[in-house]
Image (cartoon, rainbow, N blue to C red; front, side, top):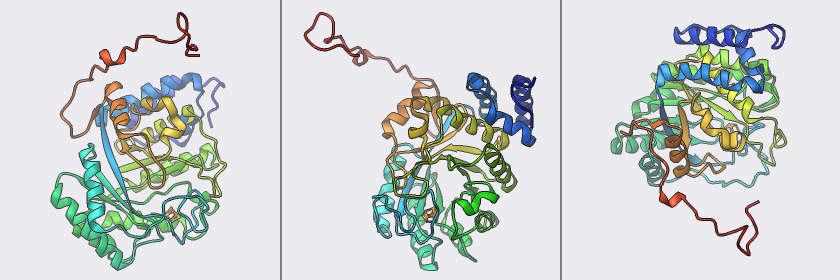
Length: 364
Ligand code: SF4
């Protein structure tokens, strides 16, 4: 491994990574690791290099995705990061399958907000054939009303024939994350395996569904584990790669894992961009919590975000997401505006009425 500070020229490595990514070549393990281990002071160099790759494949477009949690909590699996796991003490909403009309209406709200992909998610180990019927009905209704909007299903481990039935119902994509490196999988879940997850991604792919598979960072893994899972994802050739940053829900085994800094989150996104250069890299759960006011910088790396709320936690208000995208000079995919908007206006000028010269305390 090339150590930073031991004579390694980071700019030369970044240049090489960019050249490789622009021609679809795989970075070496050490190159990917170097991105994660670069210093905070070098962050803007890392972002600038990865942005060249993002811009080549996706311009400055941001795709918006909208989650509909069809069935929440009550899961028999024990994924340590998940607030819906069995025995979870997290006080999340728990409910069984939404009525189809409710699901379609929620999807419609996300689409009205600008989403170009709807992700239909259900807790559980995997769907029964009856569950597939239920979801197929919802998919059909959404596609009829919004033929240009992509529908992705995320229902857990798939068994024989289920992926094909979802595809026949009109689903465009299937999400199933690898989450972490294969060798670490038993430390984040004991009720299914990493190989089970790979199998489901492959089933979806074989059935003609666009594979969506990503990671959760911040679960106590090493830098090497993140590189391992990113390289494993590259082998699976997913079309989209969600990058989640662990939301340490109180009441889950990983509820005290507050390890991520905004700078490290940005380096993770850059590393994933270099490893999967032409994939839709999606800034996913935990972005608001871990990136804070650095979120706009993530748009230079990821070309896709979730709009609105997550499965069991609330996201940034959708109008703030749209404002963030516009202010950063990016455009929402599918909307016509191509020019950065001027965000200033008279309503933003607040005349001071506190502090010096008043009886009110200062803004301090
Ligand atoms: S991640 Fe999915 S399978 Fe695992 S506990 Fe949560 S809902 Fe269940």
